[in-house]
Structures are given as C-alpha cells and as structure tokens.
Image (tube, helix red, strand yellow):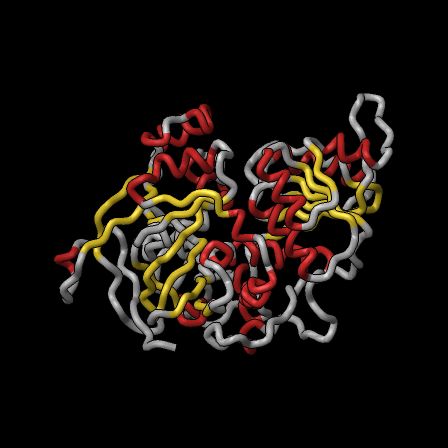
Amino acid sequence: MAQAVAVPQTLTRSVAASSLPQRLMRGLVFAPSLPRYAATRLLGQYFPARALPLSLAAMPEPLPRGDFQRLRVRLAGLGEHDLALLYGRQSPAALATMSFPAVLGHQILAELGGVRVVVNPVLACLERGLPECPACARGEDHLCLSSLEGNFAPGSVGFCSDFPGGFAPLMLAHRERIFPIPEAVSDECAVLAEPLAQVVHGLGLAWRFGWGDERGRGKAVENRGGGQGSPASPPVSLSSSSPPASLLIVGGRVLGLLAVKALRVMGYDGRIHVVTRQSRAVELARFLGADAVYPGVQEAQQALGVGRARRGSAQGGFAGVIEASQTAQGVQAAAGATEAGGRVLLLGQTGAGAQDFAPYALRQLSLQGSWGYSWDSFARAVELLPAMHGCDALVTHKFALEAWPEAVRAAATGRGIKVVFKPN
C-alpha cells in the first residue's frame, strides 16, 4: 500500500502549536451541551436542526506520521449512532467510551493514492501503541479493554477528539484498518461496508451465518494484512444454533435492509419477514429478498396464525428475531414476537429505555447482543460487497457538509434510508 502517513492532532490544538505548516479544512464537529441534550431528549426530531450541538468548524488538516494514512473522503454515512448523539438518545454506557469535541463520521469511503478504500474505525491496542489486552489477543478487538488509554483520547474514529472522522475532507486511518474496494462495487454500496460489518458480525454470533465450519476462531491478529484480502475468521463467541426456518427482522432502516440482503448472499433460503412502515423501505425489503413485509409485529404474528394473550397482545411466532430498529420499543416488540426457546439478536446499539424482561424468563428466550464488529467480521463484510447487488439503492440522499441541517432532518424524519455526506 502507499507510504504510511499521519498521527492525528486534537481539534483544540492551534495551527501555531504545530512545528509544520498546516492548511485548514472544515469539518462537522459535535460538541456536547447539557442544555441542548435536555432539549433534544424532550423534543426529539422536532428540535430545530440548526440548534443541534453540531457545527461546521475550521481545523488543521491532519499531518502525516507513522502507520496512520491520510485519506481523502469520498462519502461518509450519517449513521444511527450519530443521530443518537445529536438527539440525546445515546446510551450513557456508550457515551463513556467516546471523547469530544469530535468530527463525526464513522461510515467512510475514501481514497488513498487514487485507490478507493473503506475504513474500519476501531482504535484498539495496536493503534493505541499498547500491548495486547485479552480481548484483542482472542480476536475481539472491537471489545478492546484499553480503548480509553494509550496514545490518544477514548473512542473510535468519528467519536474521538484526536481523530477527525469522515465528516471532513481529510482524515486519518491506521494501515491495518484500511480495505481496498473492487472497481465493480459502486461508491453507494461501498459506503455501507461499516453497517454491513455490524450485520455480518451479529449474524455470526447468533446463528453462524456466513462462516464455514472450517474457519478458525479468534485469529484476527494472525489474519491481519493491512486490508490485503487475508482470510477472515468468524466471531469468537459463536452460537451453536442452526439457522431457523424463518426469521423476523424488526426495523426497515439500513441495518434491517442490509440484513435481508446479507442473509440471501450468505445462502439463507428460509423465509424472511420484515416489519417496517416506511413505504420506500417496504419496497427495498422486497427488492433485496424479503418474503413478506408488515406494518407491525402483531400483523407479522397474525400472518403466522399466532394466538393472542388475554391482554390483547400476540405472543411468540418466530424462532429467530433480529431487532434492527435500535429502539427500546423495537426490543420489547422483538421479545414478544419470539416463540418459546427462540433467540433475539440485538443488531447494533439499542437506545436507552426501560425493558420488561419477563418474556425471556417465561418463554426461555435467548438474548444475543452484538456490538460493532471484529477485524475479521469487517474483512468478511468487505468480501461480501461485490455480491450485495442492489444495496446502492439504500443511499437515497447526498449532501455537502454545508447542507448538514437538511441532511440531519432527512435522516431524523425518515425521509432518507441512508443519508451520506460528500465532503470533497
């Protein structure tokens, strides 16, 4: 690959503090504000976009150094984690792993030496200059025990005050986190690599989808090769459960729709049911391989002939349920839709909210959490991209950085399935 570049500089460091001449660039900076946090929690998507704790600010361009490459950003997706930050829905547990102010943007398609690449934004022991922690040693670098320590501030790229994310023209990434993209893959499909990695990792944890039995476990460090196509290993904590005959996916946003297509690409031939109300998502779910789409969980259960409980809510119906809405309400609905002895996969980080765990005890349900992705899961997702035909249709809106209020409104109100920024 091209010559290694750049250790990051904090957003608060002035140009004069650098010993090298620097040019300025502008990026979208998130700076937490307690009053705005309270207001966004109260008003949600009705909070004025221009009043959110986000601004287009000037900062020094990142400087070359060490094993960090400087990339020019082509597209950067506005993700659910970004919206959760902006609208006060982010879990306090997740906030504790981040540092601010930070240039957001963790779903990144960029260029390095004229080659299109995607970026795994994880910053674990290797990138932080630390000895391997137990999680990194067993191949679960996304669960790094030292993610708050080392050479720079806590967080991953896009949620770290020392690393500008993809909502800026230039950014930095460690050479081990950079993956070239085949020419046949469109920009719109490639920018979905990061959420696709979340899907691949979660499916591997819950039901071993997409991973042959011959692959070893926890070999992320051995397999690393700077994104050069090294063979990937399955997630470490694999379930022994075989795939169920049918699956219900709760949520028709990006993760849910990518799960539909990924299941088909990985050879799943069972029935896929999707719950979503958004008309465009209904069309895309069917287009990508869903067998049936319903406006609500109860409608999906009724289609299976599931009976109703005394209090008027249907129970059970599906052996496997994927919760992809990333909402507390979606988690509760997923539990209610799972049959006795079945499994619920929480795909992606769920927003904070109260939960009734009685269904898990009463019907002996298994709950599989899935946070991020290992290096191997990300590599596997990149391998799948050429077969993810039609996924470029998920990118419904593109915006310049200057139009960020309109971009945020489109994403927050559900007008866009996947909203992306085009910084250059």
